[in-house]
Length: 156
Image (cartoon, rainbow, N blue to C red):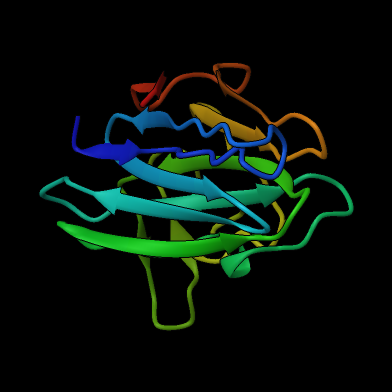
């Protein structure tokens, strides 16, 4: 499990004086999400190889980090989520891109581009789906687009 996704939700603004955290493990990607007025997601690549997280916002939501980025081995990447954001994350691997960002991934490819620009990953792609709400937040691991990386969500 080298690519992990860890999710921490601070429910203080929603439930007075109560806090909670959740860990989400994209077993080759670690994402850390902490919820306050805005949430922070930290992707960790614990692999010995590069991975390319993909990000697709839900309709009408803000595009984050151009929709994807390169994450070298043993590195982390921090991303701020706006309040009430919803979308999905997935791991792409076996990617090769030229200097202009054009190329392909073995799994999770999003139109042959480093920056997915709102496009989803081509199946198979294991998904982490997140919706930040006013009163409740929702998150799940989905295999609706197939399976390419082991992933789990665990409260911390």
